[in-house]
Image 1 (cartoon, one colour):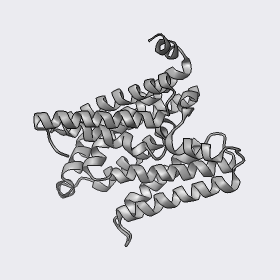
Image 2 (image 1 turned 90 degrees about the horizontal axis):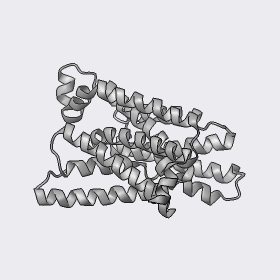
Image 3 (image 1 turned 180 degrees about the vertical axis):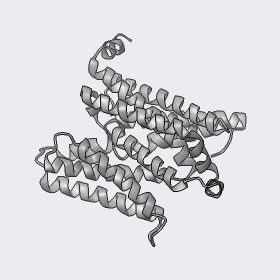
Image 4 (image 1 turned 45 degrees about the vertical axis):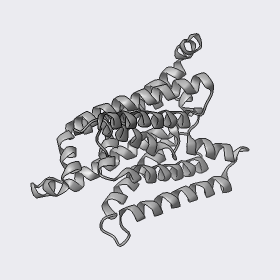
Length: 280
């Protein structure tokens, strides 16, 4: 406990906990909708796009990689959603092509142009998370706060619209609701969260941060509101626990958080079985 208290006094750890809390909160909010709409693959695909954009930013020497990564990921989210249903290459196939292509191109660029003496280490930390969450600057923390607040306000303000689009898209279209617009809004919000979460869990593990809390909540609750609230609580507990365990035992941040999330899901699964819980 003394060691943990000492870590908590460090400004870099405090900044990491703030950012992690915000990312976990927003990821769980959107995760419920993505799982129910069978859009979980969007998170995985966009994370690979973000990795490719990060590689390009590193090659061209951008000091602030977010300037390139965020707009590229958002634009890809918009294009995937708008064109995925209107082309001969449908949704999941299109996302698979874009995500694998972006991942391959990013790794190729890093191999060809990298000046790092530890390329494999750089790639590994980017894909699976690193201690960069502990080296966040004050400006990066404020950027995360602003974007997270915008995501939360958007979700709260359009909660009923998102609810309708999630459960009965045909009815929503019938009553004149702009379904495509809300799909677009959801895609943009998840793109923002994915970019923010890359420093926390890495591009390959981001989907777990979005999916596990939602699936855990669905094992115990039935209503959309209850599932969303519990998913947020579950995500916060697992993320903070994962970071603290990582600090105390020097384990990789990203994989530790995902492991705690997986353990949380197993607990909820068995509790749901005992209570006769709902299956997702």
